[in-house]
Length: 459
Ligand code: SF4
Ligand code: SF4
Image (cartoon, rainbow, N blue to C red; front, side):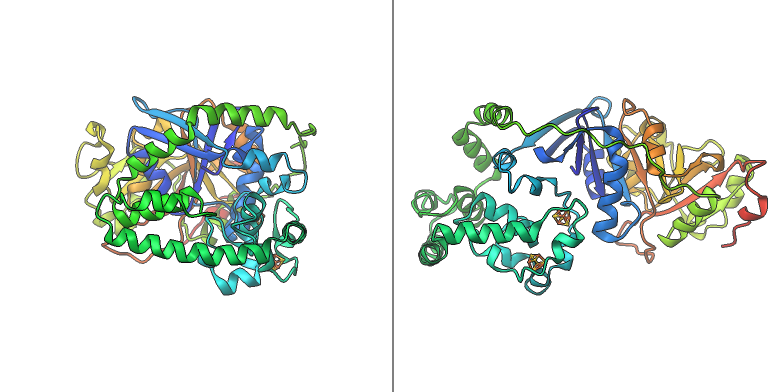
């Protein structure tokens, strides 16, 4: 999950491949795991954060799929798991609290000369790069003491960070702390010893039998090695079921008590309240939103077709060779016929696997980034949007709004799960992969405030 909204209780996931979206849309059970720092106060704040994330991660105007969840699918279940794992401790720390503002855009990684030459694996941590060096060393200086030193202090990471985390200053501070405790020399020696012990444990696992019984006690006895590191490595090596490892781990850590602990820590280490920023502002507007929408759509690989009436849609779509050749088309737009079978009888969304095309109605489009909003009730199986090879969205031309702030003001977050989508990049046709090459069709042209000639699209 990329964001959780305190005001509405909803969560948001942003992907470019639709992988998370399809994983969430197929099974009836959805377990959403998120760090507690993912909480943002207001629904309207998403207009800022979704824009920041995409621009700073990949330079896109918006991620290809951005799905909003405010409840389970009909007949399904939705559970949230809020993960602390040291975050509440960081929150109580005046120096490192800001590092929890990270939205995981990756911009600091992309600019860092050390990361660019050494790659992610060299950090030996889940989160690499400048932000990883801060987060990991701030939480476990003994294990990650070398990371703050793998830095030229060029400051480029802090310059590009969209949420202005002073990463270089935090790394410098960490060096002082680590040196003050005399960690480097002592830990280097210990680390060498640990390495040797880990190697020995690894060999023991390989020859120790399938249930890994040899490993557990040995790994636990290694000083300075985190239990989870040993657990993960040895479980995989020895073929222990992940379920068993998870159950043992939660029993050992007493999961219920940890929840109480998190709440207690957060209440104890209150931070000073600050006023929420005003979201009233001169946000981006366009003289001709439809033109802007069309331009951005083309820039990100989509295609806009114009129809005067819904009745024109079949003829218009017939121009698309891939649609003419499609054997399985599910249309949720009455004017366009479905092909292949009666899709309304589908009860298991896995049956949509064969779908070549999905034609769905969009609520409205956003000129700023060519996003199209789709409300779940209009799409009985949300998986259809992500599983189909091609996606056609039919949007009324008069429903093109200027920016994301207008979009979030317009949507009632109480609506069941909804998604917005912008086109994937153009993909070569392939028989082995499924790509959603989005195409937006504008119908019902407005009669007055857009000149018809601006809608004379050529393809
Ligand atoms: S200050 Fe350090 S971590 Fe940040 S970009 Fe420069 S080398 Fe990388
Ligand atoms: S620290 Fe800043 S630049 Fe780096 S991933 Fe987080 S938000 Fe992006």
